[in-house]
Length: 543
Image (cartoon, rainbow, N blue to C red; front, top):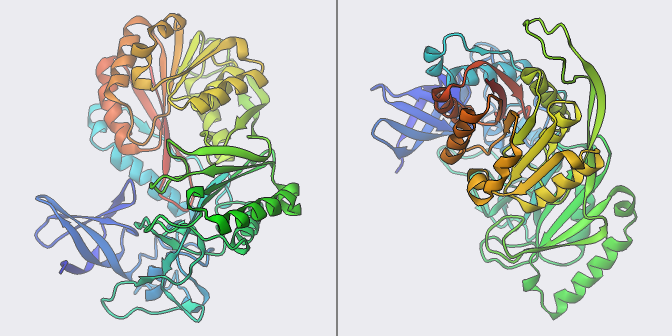
């Protein structure tokens, strides 16, 4: 039986919402799923290591009232915490009535914190990540975090999963208290369910009512198409047996354009003679549906018969069912920083400001920043930090070109070279350059960043007078070949390096590598990426 620790105090949290505590012998405890500094918790050890143990929270005994001071706005908030309904011994800053709350989805775990405290914790996480490197760079500044324009309803993309297995924590529509030491049971409560995956489980679904991180319009559309699917008579997909039909619903929304895209994923190899007729009837229903016709700009269907529980596999096929293949989004900049005249002083006296609306095509699988208003804020801050740019801009993880095209449109640089591994994103990037009048100033290449110069060596010929390199890599950070490529370029050109990171841990690792190659860094700018969650974005410029 796994060892249980009682009344352990969490000292602090790291990136990824990993809590840190100590055992009585001083050994570190790394805590997943729900850690908050100052909390007193009971733990179950799940892994034993030489220097530390990994543990999961089984019960929250006390919460620190200095931190937990927010409003819980979602009825599906973190149900295992609600079951305990604990109050702090010092005061009563946060209480819940379990009868008003339903099965928790496991997301938005920070909503019991005020937004001010959420931001402070994120700043602390970034500062903690840089503790070691600041010994080498004592002048490095961690700037105050930039707030998100929205605390809720900010996501422009969301993915829902169909399934049969859902968490059994309800009784007569109310929370059912668990017996001491008893794990939550999971059983087949419904042959038809769709919403979010249960935290840590690939086959179990939490069937909830609404998500506060997407717009009311997106919630309405989800409920509507869910009901259409349910009344079709076709079964939900079973992740255990790989039988069934409906697999996923993805909704993408243009925040500044009010356009909607729905991607419905199905497993059509499971169709029989009877269910084929039901499927054809369903297609006729959605074709003639008034709400879908009025509210949705494009509806595509992905036929995915792969075993992996993902939207798009290597052998799946996506077809446009109604309207166009894509939607459009805009980034709107008011009084944004244009490329100023070159200056020698540090007071930026030759400031230049402009307003612009930059359009982007968004396809079913192409990447676009999930928080549109946040992207506007992030890009504007990044433009301020790089300041004056002339020559060519190289964007090594360009996606659909949103960052590089924005920079070029605002006068940051004269030409753009973008590299991206996803061919569909490159197709969108070329189109995006065209609709913004930049098609003669851009070159986009479908290659992995770490192989860009080896697979297409002629691309280096387009990097004469290189003024800026933009990197916005995956969470794993930079591949070692990309670091080497940047350093090789540094030998030939004197350029600025703009790094946008979603992971402070890999960010620090990459900075340590880059400063060995004549790069200097003065400041880190944290930006709140997703309120109510632990995610953090950081911007930094190396020169």
